[in-house]
Image (tube, rainbow, N blue to C red; front, side, top):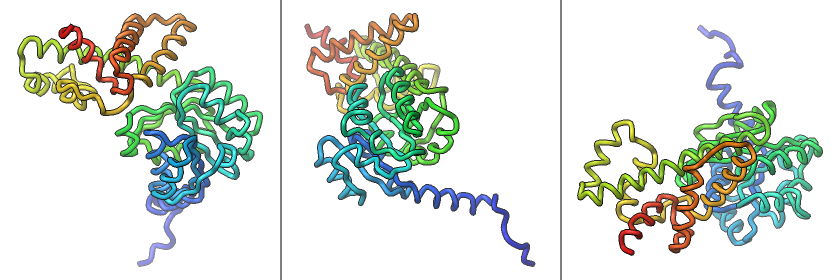
Length: 316
């Protein structure tokens, strides 16, 4: 017997409608570095969006367009024109201001009602500044830094910490989901960046602890693989341990987030801590350890290279 038309809330129909809504969005992505390049790719391939890209080095944008079939813009303002959502992932506060409110910045091309999603790890101060500037143009702004590293970006499984208005977040979330597996609204503008600072504080102390543990095990003539196999099933387990112990043991540091970028992030953390009165003695110490790694020539090594300064001391 025919039971009549399906309810509009029928899950299959609802999922299809959501996919169709997402596919109609006009999207721009500014900044095609190791993170932005694959993130923009997922907006095109997984989300089905009409994507325009801008990158300071035009050849990178041309390469992306050839790979994914999107459009290349010559300025951030041009990229943003007519877009529903504009994403950004650049280096620091100054870079962010340049591509948003600078002479050819994206904010000059935003249409009323557009939403700007910033995936850069930057200060809470600049997030609030740009939130105000976007609101003056009748646009939304979300600070949405990500965690998960290059591998997370390439596999579309990033964690996104968001600051901004709830209604703007609700509109942008289905699009952000194209490259994320976890998205959370942390609070008002700036809260996403503050949450990312918490993330970096945790990572800094954890990597130093893991570095010391592996260094100790090697110094004590233990079989590092056997030790990790056992302790990784207990309270010491972490993502860093599961994914980096072997390369740390072998002195391979070409696997992700660079020391230079970690020092930039920790600089923001320590400045903010000074402003808020938070005491971060371990974070400050690890920041100096990373400075030593830079002095060793490890500016582009990944963050697990903290172990190198311990082993380098043994050789000196």
